[in-house]
Image (cartoon, rainbow, N blue to C red; front, side, top):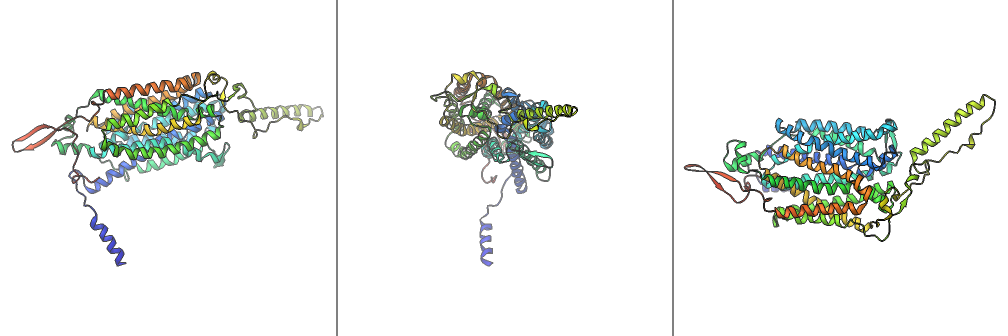
Amino acid sequence: MDYIRRVKDLFKSQKTPFESKIESEIEHKERWRSIYIIYFTMFLISLGFSIILTGVWPYLDKLDPTAGKEFMGYIVAANPFGQMLFSPLVGWWSNKLGSIRIPVLLSLLVFTIASGTYSILELFPITQRKHWMLWTRFLVGVSSANIAACRSYLSAATTISERTKAISMISLCQVLGFIIGPALQTLAVPFGDEGIEFLKLKINMYTAPGWLNVFLSIFNFIIFLPFFFKERKIAAKEAMLKQGAKTEKETWKGIKPDYLSAWTLIVAFFVIVFNFMLLETLGSPLTMDQFAWSKADTVYYMGLLMSVGAVIACVCFAAISPLCKMFPEVKVMIWGGFLFMVLGRGVYIPWGETNPTIYNSTSRLTPFHDKLLCYNHNMNITNTFNKTKFDLNQSNLNFNESNLNLLDCNKLVELVGCPSNQKWCFTTRKMTLFQFLLGYGLTAVGYPIGVTLIQTIFSKILGTRPQGLWMGLMTGSGCFSRVLGPVFVTYIYTEYGPNWTFGITAVMMIMITVWLQIFNNRLEPKKFQEVVHDDDGEEMIEIEKLVEIKKEDVVT
């Protein structure tokens, strides 16, 4: 026991005492606890969008076989459309309140209700199911507008020296949410198409992810209550200390935003998120068309692929901080992020030797290939039989029930491949599995680096002023790209195929990469003036880089 006590004392003696001029040790702990809660919130909101991506098409097809890919595009786009509309509003509201608690709690309540409704769509009449699915995804998007408030708070709750790492982590949580979501959908595959019933609620491979969202959002709501989440803002205190300013507003004069740079980064954010979300949205239809995978195979294999992508993303996020110590952040963003995204789009133009497998799309909506239509077919025959039997019994005649021509709806043949109503299937080469995996790997490397450093540089350009509205604009640009992604699938991929789809997106990535390279000097963090005190009073002096608190001032 004495030996154990001596070991403990040894570690205690080596503990670095907490020293800071701008916060106490308790405030430091509460600040970082609030940041960790923000990380989880960002993960949950991203998860809420992506967890249904690989399952939304087969789920919609099961609920209403007549809906089609076009309506699927609207359903996927409904989420970012709601987020795009409400992100600037939530950002402005949080600025006005001076707190993000109420906006975030309200958004989590909406998220819980929408996710629960998504999981009980089979209880609605068949003709209404696709419309209710559309509304649930829109409300999930409205709830995810809290991302603007969360990003704004993170900028206010971190010092300059902490910000790159913190934004890397929040971006990691977002990307992991986007990537792990489909992996969780894969884990639900064993429930099968029919699933099980619990408290009269059906849990299958499509609804289980929705129920998971419900439980996670309830947990998120609880940890955002005042007992756990305490708002501690430090960025303004840091600037006031270094500039000798008496108020937060005085520090705003230290860094004046370069609006051209700010809008350039907003556009760049739009382009990179558009390309990433296009791949997330298009992944299931693309693999089903190109590789003739079944619905279950698509959910399973895409989930595995995105799980591998999550591991790659983690490695890339860990590499951002060391890379930014060796090279300027702007250079890492351009050559480590956007260049890989350009290559990822280019390799997706099909180079296979044959056309994809094609099936007759007119045969798809028949009782022989669709379970719901099969059930309706058998029901109609049974109803006709019962009516006829009743009529014949009135004449004392017998009717043989064994002559009914009922179908076995559990042994239907699923049609796989590229549907014949997509005319490009007959003329376009098939994509190879290797190039699909290669393109996904390049995207898994480029996206996390690019999207993280865009937000980091953007935050530093804005300075210490409240960033809720600006973060709302950036979030809105990302949402707009996610709105256009599904529409792009509907009108470009469905009509013209992968050559036009990935050709156009490759050109978009090339153009924004060149633009960033031209203006890379303006994207470097601005110089600002620091107020110093001498015997004669105050004077303003120029410094060549952003002020960072010394190690003895803040323990990170």
